[in-house]
Image (cartoon, rainbow, N blue to C red; front, side):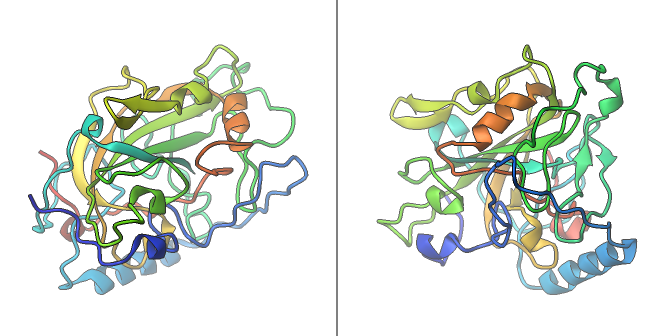
Length: 300
């Protein structure tokens, strides 16, 4: 079976802009931190980024890229690689989330705008107009605050539960998905993906439960991923993050993206940001939605 072609050692992967931009700041969720507000860039900036991506990948053998509109099945990328095993046969290696959804689907199809051109304030959102006034009531203090963003009721997040075929222990970043004792190992990767809308409701889902994991038959497994948000759309793609807005990701990833959202109690997301095994404390930026047919696989 053909596996992911990875030439870098695991230590080098720690600095790669893979599932999240390596240059993002990692400010703690401290109430004293101040969120910076950035004006949205013009459409031409995103157009130029798309042109650069097309130019920098043309004829260079890049496989299909991510994120994408999971409701659109067309794709012309001819590079074929073996689908990763089911996540139940792999090890959970990392959990993190992006502010706004990186993928697009019917339930999260509202464009957040161009953002700052570097992945923040962009992506796709759930229609929060369907939420009640109580669910949208402002919180006390800032939630998962960073230089670029803070979370508020009504916001959308996309959570990535990353799995690897390597013998590893869950931890921080993509580097945790590779076995540092065997740096030239080529593990396969799968991302179980769930989009959530944040609500101010103590009866909504608890993010601590959603991110629980334990060993099952010798493999680390996320045990709280919702099972009632639709049949996951399966497709072959790449790692994401705004570091790949103008260049292709060389990493091959099998994706399982659930088409429907679930409501989560925003206060529990804030608690998670204050301390978790993955050292995550804020929402990561998003990569531009990949629209170029030559960079997309066909969804069967």
